[in-house]
Each structure stands twice: as structure tokens, then as C-alpha cells.
Length: 90
Image (cartoon, rainbow, N blue to C red; front, side, top):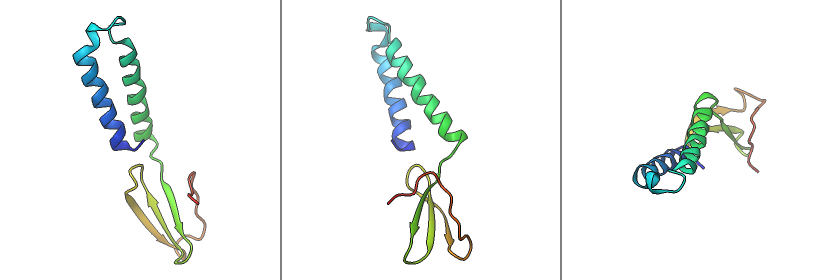
């Protein structure tokens, strides 16, 4: 789930809770639990932004992308011959 999808999901769950929470047998506790988990994930992402590394071997270019697949930086092979990252797509 992208960052923007995560924010939309939080908003949707909050709207659902506001409109129907008090009418539910558990008074919306399950929805509140989902909201809490989604907000914790959002906070985790904000504290520890993950960079997705895409390497274009033909041109020896490294592009760094954020959660929403927006380019955040570009390095040439000569600037950094060693690339470290958690996610290197095939």
C-alpha cells in the first residue's frame, strides 16, 4: 500500500467509525483498532523512510524512489559504485 493509499484508508475508516461506530454491537472497537494499526504504520513510515533502489545496468544509473514511487535522487555509477538498499527489484 502506498503512502497516499494509507492516508485514504485512515480517512475512510475514520469516516466509517464516525457514521456507524456507535450503532455497532462493539461500539466500533474493531474499526478503532484498524485505525490505530493504520496510524501506527503511517508513523513508522514517517520515522524510517524507505528508499526503493532501481538500478539501470545499461546506463549505470541508480535512481532512488520513495513509497509512492516518486524519484527522490539519481546517482551515476561514478558517484557511487556500491549501492545498498533493502529492496532491489529484478
